[in-house]
Length: 189
Image (cartoon, rainbow, N blue to C red; front, side):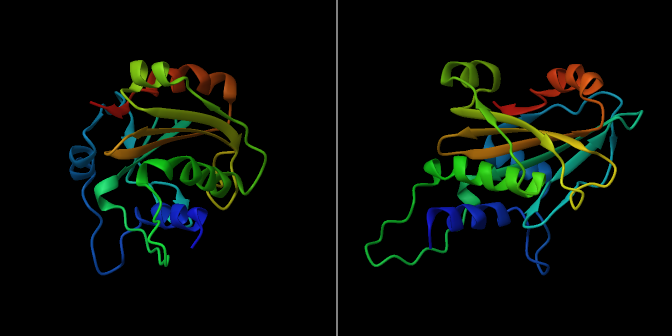
């Protein structure tokens, strides 16, 4: 399998098999040594449906103008189905950019989505992460019929986990302030 295929397997790792219930969100946070602060007054809602990737939790603003969906992927849960005669399985700490790009492709329906990687010192200072990247995009209608715009923040902590925070909205001007306020609602401890 290619490294990209391994990344797609990592995407699917969040979607538990039907016979096995998904781990509780708090369990995933603990395993990832991540912290979550639920936005005040936001209410639980169904996470967006993304083929091959399950968000663990979603919260909607009281006025419905913004939804924040969260996913935590501890590296200890990563399963790489990799058959290489030279035993050169990819390092889990090197897969995250590919997983991120694959997820953005799914969320945007393959549209153009320029990303911005945070400088390492900014990722560390803001999120206690080793890597962070963000991108804004037009949402694939298969992901949401209610929201046209999306913003994805991905974080990686070496040896621990990846986290994803997806914001769905329609009005970028209104959403910008709210997103900036919620950027650190899911971060590493």
